[in-house]
Image 1 (cartoon, one colour):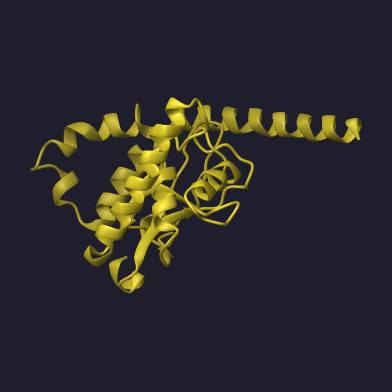
Image 2 (cartoon, one colour):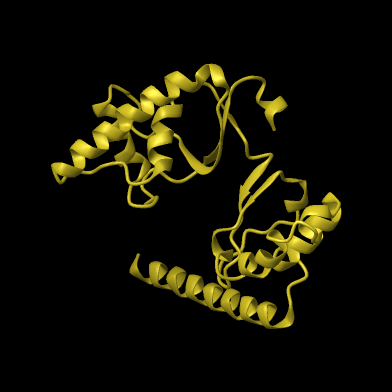
Length: 204
């Protein structure tokens, strides 16, 4: 991951539509805040908070821009005006001044809810998994092993680790109860999507 960045900054670029709400702020709204800080682009890139690769020579300049975004956030908050709502928004502003390598070959935000899955069976090729839906499932299952330095969590080969951890996280080899709930959730979502499509068709 570091070698592919060739000395540049790196982050995971998220391709959200301009009008999609991203934790309380759209890219278009973020662009308006960027404009208050002197940036012209109305819809800037949004980088996920999964990981940031910042070579030491860029540290000072990045921190300066973070401070600028944080100061604006505080002033906007006190004025009751739109503001940066998460660290992702603040760092997306900070990084826009630099040439940033997209880390999508190494990192992925993987959804594993019953109704929405983005698993594509390439996860074993990644360096980092971000699994937002596993906070009260997979991570709880792995916790005893992660806190035992003698367990497979620390001593398995890469292949063994991805196989075992991936199963706990629902990436593959899902147990029957989870598979059943996922199947029901997927079916409900398809039905809802079909209903929305029919409703839109009749409305037009």
